[in-house]
Image (cartoon, rainbow, N blue to C red; front, top):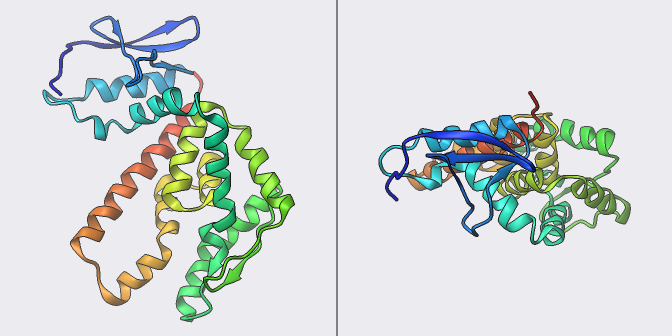
Length: 233
């Protein structure tokens, strides 16, 4: 898509902050008004539009895409999104540990162990840890606690939590990013402990390198988006 505007601005509306292109308000792909909950997030989204060259690359406008998702998808299907995000507790990455090789098991415990303890202290969620690939049943009380925490997110923050959780395969990592316990780059690194261990031993192919780089961009953008969702002037 060719750039069709010269100026980009933010305007305060009755129910939020709009993005203006040549004084015309931006709409989402579903034709809903693109209204952001606070000025810092709106300004960051506006900067994405302002930084676009002659050919607009919407894929790289990650904050805009997350805001669009919040308005078009999460608002309409909030309960389904909550179930999807909370559902990662059943198969959370950080709950499945290697028995061997020992160096991998040590990396997992060093990276994941503190966050498992943190989520128990912070949110009252006690996860069961296992070794091997066989599924482990989490307690009903833990699953209910996860759902209660996810339900507490507004539609904008929920869109960011959904992206981090699904990209990492872990609600523990998702909540840690949302709470500011870890940053996006750390979540990316922690989600790839097993893969990085294999790369250290066997090397990496170009396609895997490209995929990992794209994942890093997505997770770090979502972490920044979540930070901005809570920001105030």
